[in-house]
Length: 302
Ligand code: CP
Ligand code: NVA
Image (cartoon, rainbow, N blue to C red; front, side, top):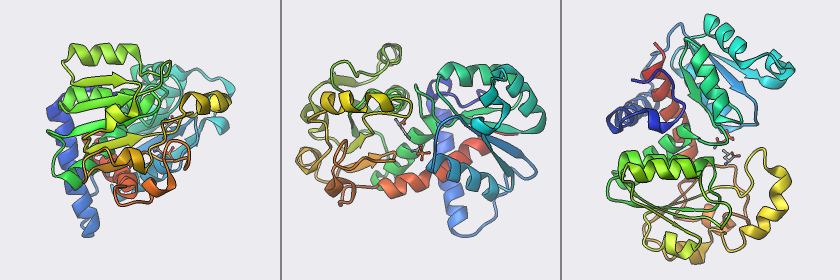
C-alpha cells in the first residue's frame, strides 16, 4: 500500500474498497458506542494553508475518536507562514507525529511534504485534488444506493479539484461519469488523459442537460474555489446556466441523489430548493467525512 494518501491514483480499487468497508465498520462502532482506538498513542498534525470547517472538525474529532491526539497547525501562525522550507517542516513534524494531514495550494507541496516525511501524508485538499471528499461522497452513494457499481454520475460546474478527483474515481471504480463544464473551465488535461488511458467511461460536455439526463448521482461545487476569489465576477458570467436547480434535477433519475461538498453558494451553483430538497444528501455526505477519514488514517498510520 502507498505510504501517503495524496491522490486516488496511488491506490488500487481493492485498496480503496477496503477503506470504504472499514469506513462502514468504524461508523457502526461509533454509532453504537463501541471503542475503536486504532490510533491509540498516536499524534496527527493537521496543517491548514486554506480555510476549513468540515475538514478541520472531522479530522480533529476523528483522531480523538480513534484514541489519538490531533494537532491543529495554521500555516499563518507557524514558521511555514514565514517561509520555512516545506522539506524542513516535513522532516521536523515527522519526528514528532505519526501522521500529517495537509490542506494547501499546489499538489507539488503535498508531494514534497510526503517525499521528506517518514510519516504518512494525507491530502486534505489541494488545487488539484480533494480525495478525502470523494471517498466520503462514494461512501454516501453506497449508503443511499447500496453500491456505486452500475450508477451514472454527473458533474455540473467547474473542472476543479473535485471534478479532477471524480475523474480519477471513475477510472478506478469503473462507474460512468458525465461532466458539464463551461468552455475554458474544463478539468485538468493530464487527469483526463490518465483516466482515458485507464479506459474510464467519461463524457465531457458544456451542456448541463446532457450530463444530468438519467443520472443517479449529481454533484456540483462552487464556481470560484479557494484562491480564485478575484475571479468570482467573471466566473459568474461564464457559469450562467450551470445552476443545479429543480429543472435540471428533473432530468435525472427520479430517485437521483444530489451531492455538494460544501460550503455552498445558494443561487449560484445550486438552488435553495435543491440543496434543501428531497434529493439532497449533503448532510450525510458532510458527516461521512468523519468516518471515511478515520478509515484512511487507521489504514495508513502505523
Ligand atoms: N468540503 C470541505 O472540504 O469543507 P471545508 O472546506 O469546510 O473543510
Ligand atoms: N473546490 C472547492 C472545494 C471546497 C471544499 C475549493 O477548492 O475551494
